View (cartoon, rainbow, N blue to C red):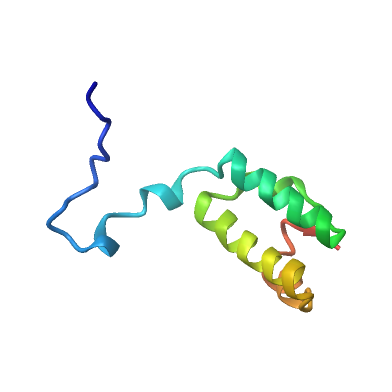
Amino acid sequence: MAQNRNPDYDKSKPRYEWGDGWISKGMTEKQFNYIMALVDKIGLALTEAVKTLNRGGASGLIDELKRVADYGDSTRYLKRDWGKYIQF
């Protein structure tokens, strides 16, 4: 069985030049479920705009939510940078 290879992949290029194909696609179901779990843990709610996030944006939101959930940090950066996606 042949593997489906990424057409942007080029072994001769450094890894950081492979392209942003993964980042620019829509958020995955696993990312969405993880965001929901983190938001519930913090005690916040999501807006409908969260569905517009791409994988890169979802990854950034997850990082910020983990920081707040795991370390009890302030939510000010969530409000400033991610307020469009989270209800406080």
